[in-house]
Image (cartoon, rainbow, N blue to C red):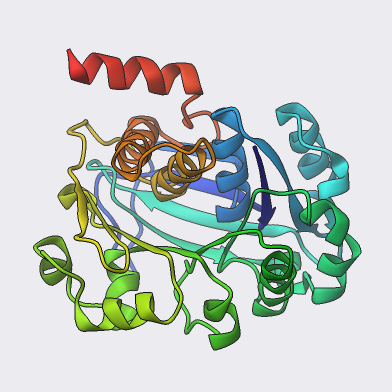
Length: 309
C-alpha cells in the first residue's frame, strides 16, 4: 500500500495561551513549540505512522531552514528525493492554542507556492506506483491539477482536502475521487450548514450534485459532532466523535484524513475506516503539538480495543 502526497512543509510554531487573543492584544504565552509541520507533511507523516508506505513531493526553500527540513525527512524515514528546492523562504506558520485546545493560525507558505506542474511531471513514474494520490490546499492548483490528471490516467484514486479553503478548480474536482472537508469548508462550498449535514438522513441537494458528478466519497468532519460520509445511492454513514480531553487540535484533521486513507488502502469497510479516522484525530488532539502526537498503528489499535471494552 503506497500513498503519494502533493505536499507542503512549514516550520510550525505553536504558542499555548489561556484564551485566543483579540485584535491588538498581547497575551502571556504558557508554552512554546517549534516543530516540522504543514498539512501535507502532517498527512504524510501521520499516514506513515500507520504503516503505509509514503512518497511525495515537497517544495523547500533556500534559506536557513532548508537543512532542518532535510534532517527531518531523514529522521522520519522519508527519502530526500521527495524534496524539491525552490528559491525563497521555507514555509512557516504560527498558531495560538487556548486552554480548550482550540486554535487560530496563520501560515506563510513560501516555497510551497512554487511547486509546479513540471515538478510533478518529473516524478510521474513514482506517482504511477501509488495506490492513492492525495493533496491539500497548502499546495498550488497547478501541481494538484497535474498530479490528479496523471493519477486519473493511471487509474489511481485521488483524495483532496481543500484546506485552507479556496474555490476548487473544476478540473481538480473532476479528477477527485474522495473529498474530505470540515464543517467550515463544507459551508464554504455550499454543501450545507453543520446542523443540516450532521442530521442528514440523505445527501443534501448540493452533496447529491457532487456525487452525481463523479465524486465517489465525501467525508465531512464536524468536530464534537463526529463525521459524516456520503456516497451516491447509499444512506449517509455517521461516525460519533470520541470523547477525549483536547489539549491541541492542530493536526487533528490531518490525522483523521490519514486514518481514513490507511483504512481505505487496507480495504476496510467504510464504517470501520471512519471509526479509525476519528480515533486518530482524537488521539492527536490529546497532545500539545502534532509532530510527535500522530498515533502509530499499535497505539491506535490499543485505543480502539480499550474503548470497546
